Image (cartoon, rainbow, N blue to C red; front, side):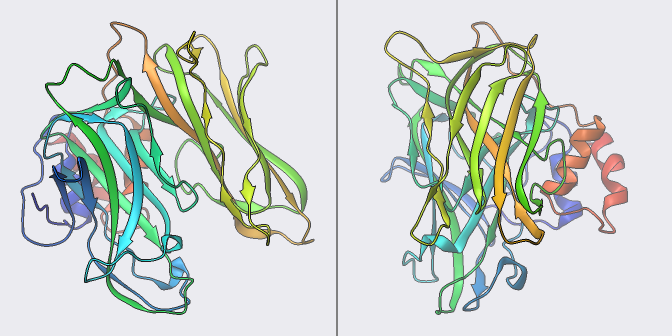
Length: 349
């Protein structure tokens, strides 16, 4: 089904409170479909023109869109792709990142909207064993999709569309055996821009939090910028390092990926985390340039999580101040004339 893009205030009104009215379908803009041939749900953002050799600051970004899930099922992977107006695949480096958010449920470590997918250009295709693990999505539930694009290539493209492809198992099957949920922990939490100025020399940045519910971390990965040496996720209460990875780089030293840690084994599901402990994400950088690099740093870990049995994932609270700040930022409303309408709109729908 096609879903129209709505302006900033329209997005806020449509979000309302958890379980509130979903946006109505229309003919243009972004859309989310269930493609039986590919066995995937596909999110496609509104088309944009991409000048050659253009940074993300020089490109009109695809508008943020609220979409309605077209079918129930279990997501077991994702990848991002870009196509031109004729449907031809474009170079993957055009996508800086893609974010998919569930506004009706909270994050594991913060009372902000739950992140379903946070993919960078180095993320590549990710898949879980479909027989074992799946993220449940209900038909008619709402998601908020956004992306940042740039064009480092010498070729200009018109009508380029960013796609998020989500392979899934339809409802009604006896598998997957475990329901999993995404989570993330960012060194720049709780809200706002996640990139930060990178000081000279060796330097690290951290953030700590406790999960809202107990469960098991099954897999974990990360996103960093160039000059990062490592990213780490640890139990700050016990000192145990759960995940640590050095980014993969090309011959020029640019980051091309961060290894994914699959914590499940034949004899264990993963690493258990509990609300009584605090957990820390830390990113390590080495900037030898002798100068501060504006917006040069970023550090986030993200993964999948199996809640303990009989645990219900907590709903979001739209009245929470962090939830409101985060939603404004996700919808690019910070500093806009619509910002002052946020609390009123969220409280009356």
